[in-house]
Image: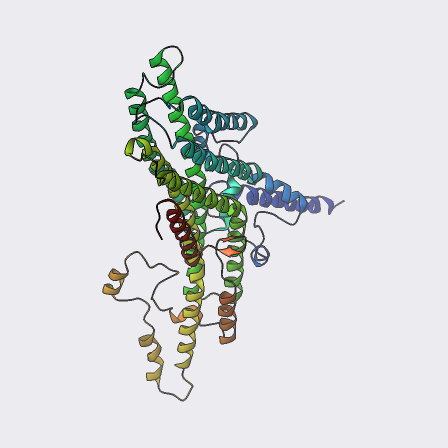
Length: 480
């Protein structure tokens, strides 16, 4: 009995410390401003999710923390989603979101096309291309809304935007990603507001100048006002949903670019090959997750936008088509909206693929600098003059004029600066060569069903689209 109380006291302290460590581990990712500790080597080595422990109890607790809730760093972003009527964090908002999509994405376009066709109107108020406009916008908006709903329902907003993976990132990556999150809403407004302003000007003119010709119910002014507002809300809702999914994809890609830039710093310090390899495997795994989530959306967006553009080209190049700004202005605005959204997708994918493949060039330069520096190492009997040669051969930074000419095109991944000697002082030639060989045979990037979305893929897509355009023009206006 004399030794029971000290032993029990020690065991109690151990249990309390373990609970404190578990609580700290679970709650640590809550705010981005906190500085987390380094992840465990086992979690980094196998490339697994750092937040998920091997213990089932810890896994359930940690997974519950990854779910979205109202008092985290996404609070302001979630409020914007709620105002856009696309928030599905609970049953009420999900029901409201689907109702708004059904009304403004499907019902209003159908009613507008069949009841407001205005076939008896004058030449300026006819809408011969309205069917292509409504079908194009509604199809791409439906694809965007369904994919966004699936992403949020399956992963949650935090996991979908990879906020649950930020706790083991550096302070630079966390701050940069938070800035990109705040900037994404501005980018969304940059694309949506001009399109909505142009559509509003057109619709107000169309209803104001042709009020007596447009079909109405009851009072002509009240009927036209309600119809104009409903059509404008439908246009705003569909374009907003389309650009939202594209901007979110750009946001996720910007996180991986920040990680790659942070990963490039490992070649400028004395890092070991194992840590470099494990970090690259983790980045590749995240790129593979992004590719798997977005591949269907990218393919279908490319197919629908291409079909929309060919339909627009077909109806406007017919011999009987009457094309002017009053008749085809809305069709041109719809085409610019869809092409801009597809441009955001392809540019974000090719940019991150280019950055990921630049790691191979950086590793090769790191290996060359280390190999050449080894050739200048002296033996015990050589003069000290030879030891100063590597300092002259490998300058750390470029001249001021070269930096001015490069502009903003260079970063830590793609630049002409040589690697300092202390960055590879403890790594052997065989390890460096093995790492470079690994990078050459394991190029990372965004893939779509096995096809890498890089600049070569864009050239191929452009060639196919141009061939189809020339073929279609040859069938309509006789270009050969």
